[in-house]
Length: 335
Image (tube, rainbow, N blue to C red):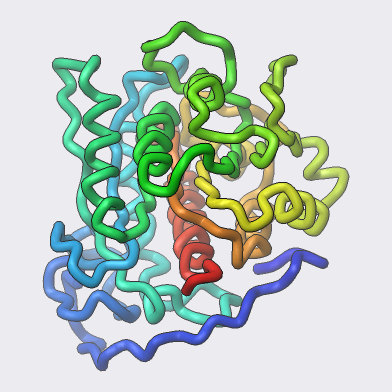
């Protein structure tokens, strides 16, 4: 669903998926091919993301989806540890067809699996950052890309560390959020509002070639990030956001991190730190759709807290955004 003057969808040649049983169920465990879209009842079955095969076999895999169920770094309402489960459940409603308006089915082009969740040792929280980094590293070091489902936003920090090891530092960060997450902090603190401060100071990301979209909480020190805050998005429109973001990112390797509270609480109430005045789901999806062709190397969607959701609309928004990210990954220049 592109917005006006957004650069448009890039035409991508789809790979023909093998014939599948159109009356199959529990495709998360019964599907044979890693390609293609197969419908099954939305109200039943094993809840992998979009009915992708549950496996830890990475042979021939292009993209891995994995949950990171952490919420001990949140500063307000907890519950994002249940985000991966909720996003998987919400994804079933769209698993029967390709994303509306996209010129190709990402699952025809990419072999995508659901790897399950990262193991986190809750009794030893000091070990969690390293566990997340190594979980990501053992996947991306084998070649596949990684889409992580949070979990609170701290998880992006060890994920960035793993991606910088793989693709070289600094990366460009494409960050959707209500908050900058760049508040100054002492080294070693596990906090979902300070991890991009540390990412800049450690050289993991280059703020001059990075973009933060949708911000609407005050932080006078931008650390050099290019900021398109919530009011700027509303006043200038989808097309302007896409053009400016493309200009800043260029062809550099990009890590995409989407905090669901970038959306206005009317579209995403189920989150720990909601802030009014945010983007609509249409704006967010259209911006992502308009960025087809960027050099995306890793991505996450985080901060879905189902206990505060209404009618599962937050989880549904996150699932749609995750599907758009898969489409973006499939539209990379090398695909």
